[in-house]
Image 1 (cartoon, helix red, strand yellow):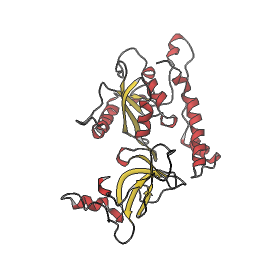
Image 2 (cartoon, helix red, strand yellow):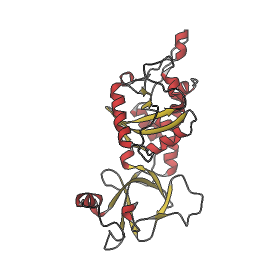
Image 3 (cartoon, rainbow, N blue to C red):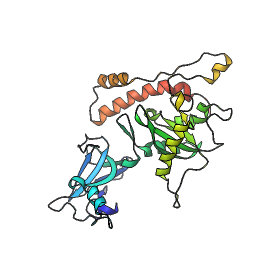
Image 4 (cartoon, rainbow, N blue to C red):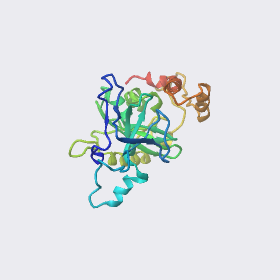
Length: 296
């Protein structure tokens, strides 16, 4: 980034070509770094945290920018605690390589979990039924924040409480392309995403739009049929109207998730995280399979 100049750079030049997704290499010689949580504590390896950097030695600002123009307060805030706060959230692996997770201001913080919007957006972009998508945080009374997906569909734009098409059928491509453990929250459909003059997503407007739509019931709710008022665990099958049995989808409780973690003795290494993720993913896949089977 511009502020760090040559004082803090990363490189993968010595690590070959088979690097993981979003790998930004390893810190160069002559720089110090930390990866910290919101309280400024160092996080465990593999855990996302904000990337703090500085030059090593007696002058931590060596090679960095001199400051923000006519804004000394912003400059000192960026250098809080003697470290430059990049605003980037990254992870580190056992080999010392760093991986970009997301911008700190874009992350959805749901029940203490940090969810990168880029991960969900990339999954949505892989579906031909979705022309474009943006993901942001929406306020949630229980979890603090919830995932909100704003999608431009390939066909007619679905609207809550309008038309004869099932909300679950409208949302099927979104659910299908959302990572298993991200299949909660809201989705709304628009004809165009808010873009700047340079065709970049207007993240601030999208976040404000998410709050308005959830409050007004103008978003489909994955936890129910549609709208925030129906958030719950029971889902009626479209086939129920034909006399077939209604189905129920029960979501795992917090206690059940905690018990699952205890059963695999969740550790902070990659093997433990992968095992736990696989277990939770399998559980959520089984829960949502009836919904995913509904044709688009």
